[in-house]
Length: 408
Image (tube, rainbow, N blue to C red; front, side):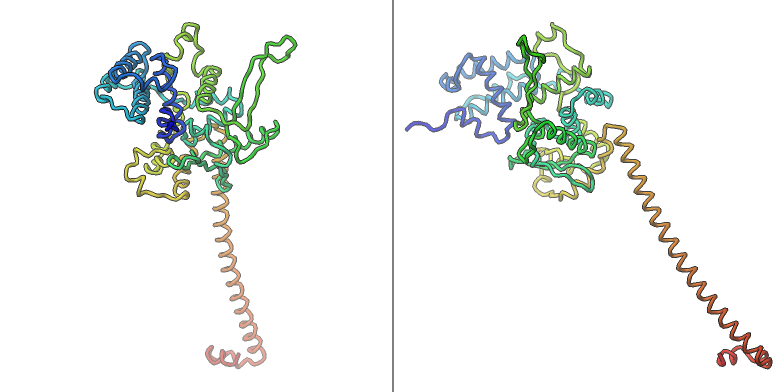
């Protein structure tokens, strides 16, 4: 009987997340090239002792020759281990773990973007990249989550002028919701209007961030040397999104342009901040500083491992999530004009509330004054009746008030 699935199929189908599938395949392929194999089956055909030697040599090579970070080595090791275990290969994994080396932390501690650096990125970004920056920042999304967002995964909430996002909507195990700021929502609306003006037929299945291809036209009769092709219906790959952010970092001078010697190092130079993941760290920091409920924060960021029992027992409604998110909207807003606009709107709302209270108090006073006037008018009528009776009969002036009242 011929086997229906390959060794790679067994490996890849045990992974649920699309992004994990991509990264594990990438690192497994690196191991394949190191072994100088062309087919995955060759990784299984060698003896167990040879497998052990190749894996240990590869880990040493990554650590000593390539100077790869401990976190990347961990992911690489996990992908190799997952491949072999999914194909029922037993190796001394505890022993192989020693070849990864001691995890002493990052080679260089990364930092988050400053407000000034984010403003620099925004100043040099086109409309598509502005949406990328603001969405990553204000939702706390992973770059892989943003790459997979389609318009059907977004819902505009008119009352608060923001979007609700269903992240990883097609993956039941990973799905969660989060929100963006009104500043981000406004930019998304302008961006979608621009796409329509350029001929994009906006549909529910359309990706939020489309794929863009730039090509060099070397034809002599060509006026434009750079040709840009907008593939509206095709979502951008997460790696392409990372590369686009790198280009924007250099264009805005947030990261200095690399020299020829630096280019030869092919990405081994450590950057002061992570390209896209730094925005997620900013979101997390702002939520903590503004005293957002910890469990809600973890829900909005799609964290599961850190939630422990909360993940199974804490079931906040979307209203509760939104109420907590509204606490950090102003802190997540970058543009000062947007912040000022929000403050003006709040002042107008407060003034309207005050005007409403004042009008209510005035109406109460008007009612009181009206009642007093009616009482005075009634007393004046009584007085006129008494005065008229006394004029007609002077003897009534000596009558006691009680007796006079009975005569009225």
